[in-house]
Length: 107
Ligand SMILES: [Zn+2]
Image (cartoon, rainbow, N blue to C red; front, top):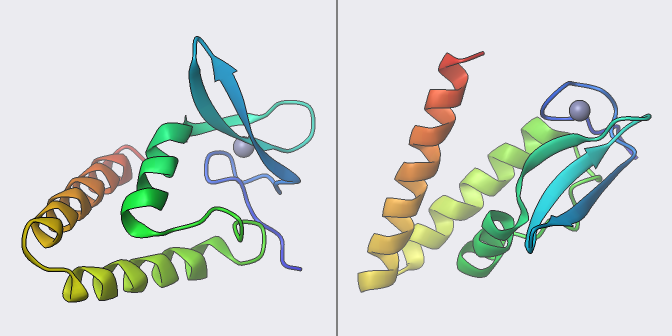
């Protein structure tokens, strides 16, 4: 099995997990003694519902390949969607890309 690097700090991740703080769930990457915060678990759950993306394979592949795979699956889904659902997917995808673009500028 290939090694997954933490998207935040680049350390090798031993496990992914969630923590509940004030009724909200957050996703963490565990590696050594201090975990990295990855974001709201709800947004991942939301992504799972809307896009059908699971986190179950997250430790199986190289993150870069996974990202490209997810992106091509998203495009495929958008192409097949119709009407209001298609518009919602496009809007959401644009927001995600915009957010990623902002983050890239901070690197
Ligand atoms: Zn980390």
